[in-house]
Image (tube, rainbow, N blue to C red):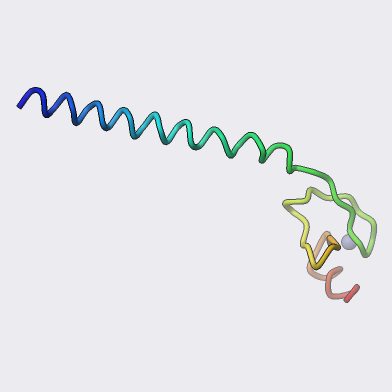
Length: 69
Ligand SMILES: [Zn+2]
């Protein structure tokens, strides 16, 4: 039974370490994608992830998206 417990602990550690390594990898490109974009309506600069995108244009708010379309 001791061997089974050791195998179980080993598998658990393997899964935990695997999850940590998997989480670290996507976080690196995320920082690179934090680019500034310009609102197509008012010219305000905003983070790409906070901007509302429509086709190839970005907008700072829903109002400006609707005002421009
Ligand atoms: Zn705007």
